[in-house]
Image (cartoon, rainbow, N blue to C red; front, side, top):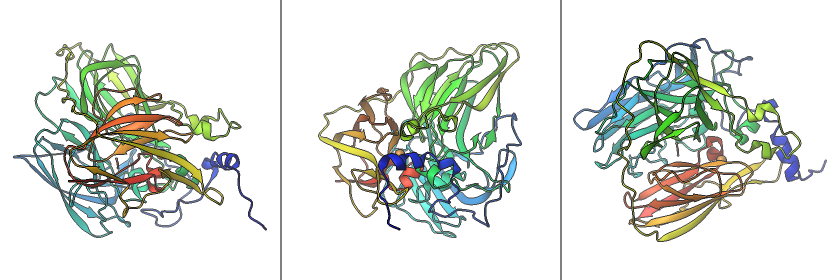
Length: 491
Ligand code: C2O
Ligand code: CU
């Protein structure tokens, strides 16, 4: 039998059969003891009060913690063999202040290599800093030291593994945690909550279910969408008492289009960084990796669902026209949590009119670059490639070489029929302009959605931290398939 070349259109159509596929991804499985059990675990904790991960806070300028990555956590009300740090998913919330030193001894009790990325922190990528090239083998540990600069903006960041090839599997298995940088002045709010959103799929035995190759190509989305490891938890509120919610999209691939029934969302920060003034929105879009800080002023008594509306990441376009309208791809609204408002009306300080937004770095842009995110077809069925500038990730190659102290303008182009969230480590950027859907926010951010067949123009100050790091698609299945490049900032 001769091998027939598969046309692009045909292969795109095949891609749409993803949910029917049972093939296991190429990377193996973390806690893969035996074949996956049939069936799916349904949540057993729906409607319980939202909990907060344990907090580990710095004192006298230092936070010294040990984080053990291991299977065996409670998720959605079940004892599962999903993974966490120190026995929980999400792991502990790390609370720091500008100028602090964070030391993490990361202990690997998984059955595959791991490491740690402090997503969004503006810290050195060098040595035992925020270095994505570190490998910690099973049974080993590694001592990280992160020096938070004294002028680091306060805000909401997060940590997760970043060992190339297993990032999607490990995050989907539950390895995430919040990381907060706090500074004066504090906002006067009644509640300050972390809402770390993840998704996963658990089989009947409480094991994280492999998602299949096709789902991985599209970017896997789990059946269970959880907030702090809980299914549709309840957030108690009293009328008028303003709460701050720090929402982190820790999903592997899912875009969250956040909406709260009966309320506007007052956005005060994006990717951890304060906006100059609060902005009222009906909906806040969070690509995987994005964060938003919100002020919520509960109105009258009642139950209000916090919802992620359907968002088409472009998979409809991948269907080649023949299968549009299949609800399994465009999804239906997902309830993340419910806010229950009751009790006497309490007055809280007015929502501030200005926020402590960090100054926008000025100075001319010297370098101009153009990066192209593309999906292509290699020979053979299903051999879809995910490339940046035509290449897949090679840790030994320098893809971008930048002189320390320069500010550059990057145009990131997406030729594919699907959105890709662009993330750059260590050096946050400003969005200057975009073809569609990613209007400039005026503040520094670290993940931006590059629309399908569109582009985004960024301004990136490389004013400090020489070293090598990476940029990639934050649909982590794509990153693991090679949609990642290296950057070397040298002095
Ligand atoms: Cu949150 Cu390089 O990733
Ligand atoms: Cu992608």
